[in-house]
Structures are given as C-alpha cells and as structure tokens.
Image (cartoon, rainbow, N blue to C red):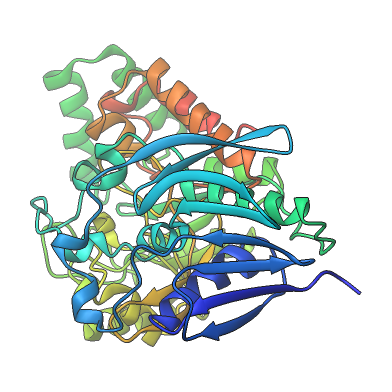
Length: 445
C-alpha cells in the first residue's frame, strides 16, 4: 500500500491553506494526501511513514480576509539560503518566516512559511494592495517583491515543491510523482494580422521605408514583400511551421472588438481575416480570444467579444490572454471564469521577463475575496518579444542569453516554457536580427 501523507493544519484560513497545499502536492506533484484540522495547531505538519516535516506558519493567523490583504502585511525582508538534504543542496527564498532548517527527532523543522509565500505568488495578492500602476493601469515587475529582491528569474514555488518532495522521499515516500517533461508553448497575440490593409497603406509603408527611415535592410525586406506579394505581418505560416517542427500546436489569440486607440486594427468579418482563421484551423492549430483593452474589468464587453469570436470561428472559445497584459486581480480572473474560459495566459510582466507567479507549471486560480478555487487555469507567461526589445531594451546577444537562462530554469523543473511572439515582430527596422531570438524560443533540451 502506498505511503500515506497526512497534513495537519490550524483551524484558521482553511480555504487558503487547503488551496495552497492542493497546488503544491496534488497539482504540481500528483501526490495523494489527507488534511486534518487541529484547533490546537499553530504550524503545519506533514507526516509520512511516522516522520514529520514541521513548517512554520507566520502569516495565516486571521480568518478575517479584510485583515489579510493589506499593505502592512507585505513582506519586508527577503533571505536567500540553501538547504542540504541527503547530500543535495536546494536553494530557497524566504520572506514569510525565516530560512532556518533543522533536523529534529522524527523529521525536520522548517522556518520558511512556504504556504504563505506560495499563496502570495500564485494569487498575486500583492497587486491588490500596491497602488503604483503604469499609464495602462498595469502592475509592473519593478514594483514587485520578486523584482526588487532579484528573484523574478527564479520559479521559487517550484523550488519549494522540490524541497517538499525530496523531504518526503527521505521519509520513505513510495507514491510516484507526476511525470512531466519540458515543453514549449508558442503563443501569438494577433493585434494586427496585416500591415497593409489597402493599396494606399501599402504605398505609404513602402514610402516610409524608402524616404524616411532609409534603412537598407528594411528596404530589402519590402522589396521581397513586393516580389512575393506577401504582407510583412503575414508570418503565420512561419509561426505554425516552427511549432510543428517540435511537435506542438501554436496558439493564436484574436481580437474581437474594443473601443480605444489600442483596438480595432481589423474586423473578424474581413475576408482576409476569415481566410487567415481558415488557414490556422486547416493546420489544426489553436485559436483563442485576445480580449480588448478595456475588458480586463468589464464582463459585458468580454462576453460580447467571446461570442463574436465563436461566431467567426464556429468553435468554443476556451483560451485567453488580455490585451496589453492588462489585469486586475479583483476582477479579471473571475470574469474569465464566468465566461467558461479554460485557461488564461496573462501572468507575465510587460516590463521584465521572468516568473510573475513564481512557477512554470499550469495551476488553478484562486479568488482571494470569495475564498474559493476557480475552475480557470493559468499558464504563466514567461517571456514576451516586446519585453526584451522595447522594455528591457536588450541587444540581440543579451536577449538570447536572457531567453536561454529562463529556458534552463524551466527545464530544471520539466515545466512549460510559455512565450509570446507577435506575428508583427518581424520584417521591420526595429526587429531586424531578432528573428534569431525568436527561433531560440524553440530550443529543445
């Protein structure tokens, strides 16, 4: 009979604690366990084969939700350390509790409140209490605990999971952990499917290349476009070819409405757009919704756009990413849940590549206000093309190095490397040479 895991938790903040252990042990590791609530308990105790791991509880001590998510409760200190377990060193980041790790009779005692830290990263509750936002009302990486303390490029929740698993293995656990393998998920937000929506637009674009920018490489590209009769933004066959080359499907997120200057660069009913959708469907790639600029906190608009995409594709809409990565932790996920979206992939910062949720696995989301797990899943976005070039302003070699380092982190945990590359991020002056960075996204290990 497989080893039994019993988790004893205090009788406070039970929904939050149960959700977090569900992610850490069930979703991420595939292990079976039982939760026991103890009115006398202060910390968390994981028991397996009569040995225990005691994990400190520093945060979840108040069942009043309104007292939890406050600016004063944000971590003030971050520590970095290593844990040695069975002659192997594991790195940890601690910001609730402390970094202590000690052997005690019948097991170990861990001072790092990884339950609070994991919940903090997965639910993004810091974004509900920090008021700083950019001109698009987005919470940026530069305001996050992870960026300020230089661990944004580390999937720290994955690190906690490995320590948990290997501790249980040292207790003689014989349950088989979930089998994973490194995968690449290519996603493409279709903001502008075509550069030239008319003959006049084509003439103006070519004229700008020749007379204004006078960039030789761009002029060469435009000449090739004229000869072949292709639009510079029509790179969809290349995008599909690349995903097919590694045996994966590409995901294309189409817009279906909007009311701002950042929306409405095309209509789903245009013949060229209808033909494009048919091309993607014919090759068995995937189509999702790219909700417009103001949908992140507007349920009615979101529902309307999803219905429009359903009509245009004849398919259910089950995957999504918010335009401009606009996101509100108090509403966006709930709206997508109500729209029966299966998974979202908005959880990446526009200004810095890395692990916004602290993890490189798909995970279920949690409504911190109504205190319940959602059916909606999140596939965290790790890197976006515009982040590398426009926000971080990296040179090609720097961008290649950044991508490779992130890929190595994902590979370490056999996770999912989710990236965003726009179909329009080729064939123009600013993107010249970055096709090398794009191709590196498909690096296999």
